[in-house]
Amino acid sequence: MASGNAILVIRPYRYSGTWVFDDPDVGLRSEPFVSGVPEMIDRLVRHIPDATGGFRLLFSASPFPGYQAAFERVRDDMGGTWYRNRDEPATEGWLCPALFKYFTEPPETIYAKAEPLRR
Image 1 (tube, one colour):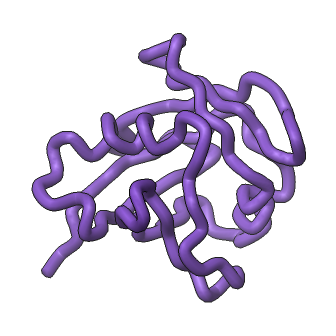
Image 2 (cartoon, helix red, strand yellow; image 1 turned 30 degrees about the vertical axis):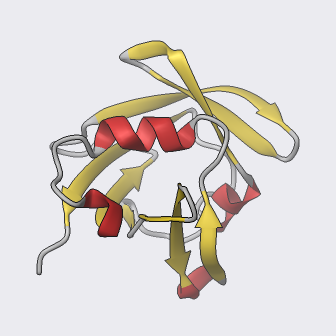
């Protein structure tokens, strides 16, 4: 992993009709999720009230206690990587090259969990 952490965390929120996130530690601001990933996020956060204002997204190349979804690598394309939800195989989404800010290579599986922000 590029970051060195086993479990990574970002705070996605809705902006201009899609999910985006900021991560000043890796030089990203309003980085959008596109091509199927917004719909995947919608399913992950369906249990979180007011998720559009922001939520915690934990993710890792290794399973961790309480993960909600596993996204399996399908193929590389246009500098990014397509992933498929293991539990919903018809659902695919493309992660852009910003993925390499967190991993040196696209993981075979990305495990994820969405949590409400503590306010």
